Image (cartoon, rainbow, N blue to C red; front, side, top):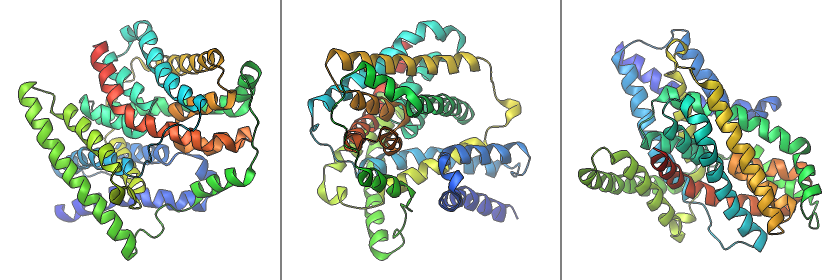
Length: 388
């Protein structure tokens, strides 16, 4: 009976994200909600209504999945990225100043809020990673710094709330204010290009995965990923002998570095479904982490200060992005799309381009996002250690 219960639990964790993604394509209003938020909600419900089996095997399954999903996701999501020289001077400046703006926001806000936040250096590092890359970076840094799953879920929920408010502000009138303050280049209102990106986001990214070619591609990528994880574990183990307690940090950084290196290999880069399967691993991770978050055991102390810290970072980051754009004469839409790409992550770029009615910023926004994904892990762990 216990074996059957464990099997059903594994099936639930692995299969529920697929059900959520399927429903999101079928139900129009559900598409507007980030799948990660839906999975957090589902996980939190099952954690608090007593349906999870209270056996040691349950905790073992949860720990196994949370420890495995992030190392799998990082290289898979990096393989398909194309690193190219920026197309324009404005994009390069927006890319660099955007990263610096997030760092300055974290460092400036730290002395104001740190005294009221539990383990503030770790929180600062996680948010620095998230606001330059995305959820995968925040998850990776949380593992490097030994953050418990419940606390990670809480901090990520705060990020979703604040970043959603930021996104609404930008889409409603934020970019219009930027156009009054900064130079405006010719706006390319190519609705077909914008709609193509939006349609692409609505399509099933996993279509064709279970064909012979799809399985071959993902099989090769998973093989490379397992090799990278093995090598990275060796690096982490070796360096932790010199610096005790640093295994996970060096393990994740090695995975990131080797994943970036592998993306330059044409045979690996050309394989399909790496990003999609990597993102699915993050969906599983989110569901499992939320299923460990019993509300009665969560510590909400300092919640307002944590949310205030995050809001401070985003406000300072956007302000500095716009000020530096004015200083270097970067156009308004490029500056705004760079800020959105870092704070909300690349998947939101087509939505903002549609609000702006400017297809010209599509590719620059996505390109900047690539750099954010690659830099987030390094930046997050570096800031956490420097602030500590």
